[in-house]
Image (cartoon, rainbow, N blue to C red; front, side):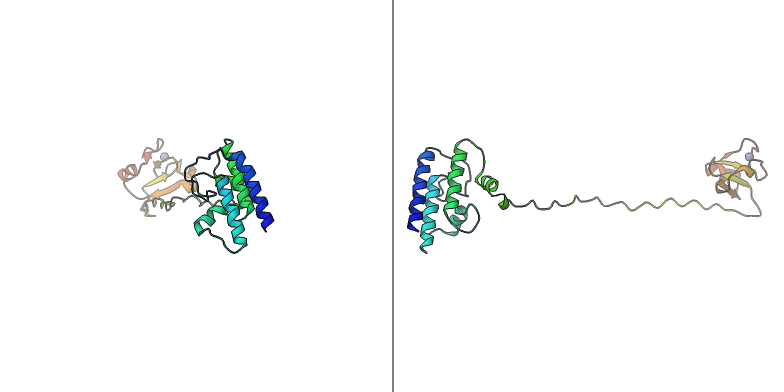
Length: 196
Ligand SMILES: [Zn+2]
């Protein structure tokens, strides 16, 4: 254990000299910023390694907040890998890369990236209930007193004895028992042959 710690600290010391002049200025840095000085740098890596060593001896000192910020790889262990991520991030950010610690970790460990929540299907506007078709006005028909015959397609009305009546297709033919005025009011116009 001692050997590992010594080596780790040596590693930190080495990288520290490389990145010590680099200040990663980012607002609201938390992840990786174990010492809370607003930057993620070798100082944080040192703290992580020391904590790792202390924990190995059952003497960890980090509170839950620090622990959260120190566990960069989210494996619930504070160890040299977290410190390494801190140092690499520090170097990467110091070299000008504009990347958050979190995004950096996601790039290194894509499996940590939270999956996008399934997008809610867009809310369909409530469909209008189909409008009832206007009921066809019931046409009064007295079979014994057919005054006119309608062609519902051409909107003409005929005398029942007009020769055109026989040519009206049955689905377009509508017998009518009413006045001429009624027929006109219903939108029908007189046939040009029988001139009803
Ligand atoms: Zn006619």
